[in-house]
Length: 35
Image (cartoon, rainbow, N blue to C red; front, side):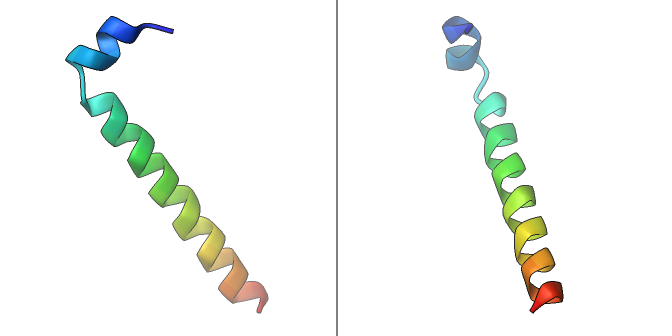
């Protein structure tokens, strides 16, 4: 848990958001294929 790095590097937050978007897109794609 490095708080200083999070404060100095907002890119980490963007990476987390990108990961969530990728996972959500994969889940949606999987659900649409199943349905």
